[in-house]
Image 1 (tube, one colour):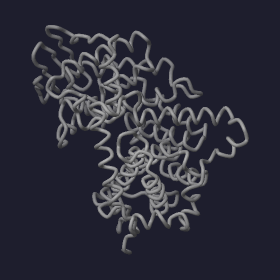
Image 2 (cartoon, rainbow, N blue to C red):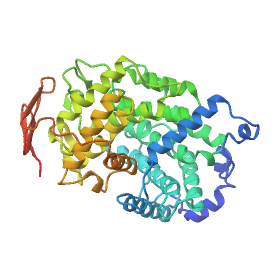
Image 3 (cartoon, one colour):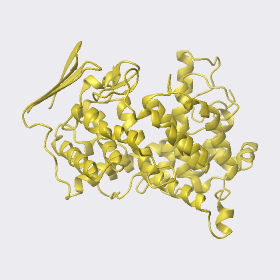
Image 4 (cartoon, helix red, strand yellow):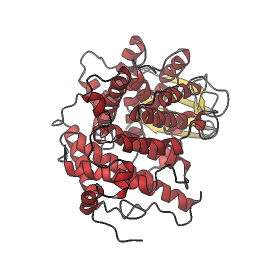
Length: 457
């Protein structure tokens, strides 16, 4: 493998490199500058610009005080992480960072190839961290031209080397269709004004290659449940970044099979169960991802030409009360619906619940006024009664989710709701053989063949 370039040399010379020429250079103005100079942007362009601005808010958070906790600490940590990525970035053939070599000498779908494809996702995530540090206040890197140019050069290198429409995927399908696609499009939204049309086209063609329209042809395989929502998110963002209404329309329609209740396989059941991987109760894992993904897309597309609604969408909204709330108790989510998530280092029943609580607030924005008010009161009650590991002290909580929960905590018009029962409430879900029993002091939850008990500490 050739010796890696220094990061500064890479950024300094990339503008003249053939790679930069191939995707439009590093420092040209945004792709719609011509339209803006011409006078008035078209209605379609204005709508896409508004959607990008809304997604920026969903990535970065809004209406928080960067000098107040927990945001001061979260922003400082973001800046520290981004500065570390910036300093270690050393583009070379097959990598952007020496510890993240993605070039697989024997590409296939074995465990070794899974590791190589995962490094593509991690590389995209590091670039996204740097882009967020550039956009956020209080990071020490806010508005840094060096950070911006490093991210843009890194995106070009990633595209030239691996994430392009000429690469055959290897390793884990998820890395190419969901992980890298989402992170790449998020970064493109954050730095959109600094992207040329040629670069936008190149990155969008890469997503089209790895996430072709046919992934939505049938609701089977890896295109169900939470995975379908993640696929839709990537394609919706690809449409917004590339201003392609057909892509946004396709992905918003492709959410439809997620909403109706199922009688077998993955999805929500009429009894309130949520199943992923064919037979695993999973509202504390994949179900939480699904709720976050649908909530974000509902919030993003509300009021647009592609708003998500209808009677089937109401079925999804009903799952907050039927599938989520029974398993959350004072800021924790029961282990019996979190599957392998309980084994992940650094997580707990509380830390798994906190993002889901913020997702309920997002979902509520697309619900009726009565539902939204009731859910906000319910989440505020969980926030107030979580003495063991308060959500706003969770170091792993994203700025967006922290800002949603902090705004709720500070909203004096919302009164914290009590527990669903002040004595005892027992519920069973025949589909996944799952039960929950809420009492004054402790929570019991379990699948019929493997009883578990979660104690409020």
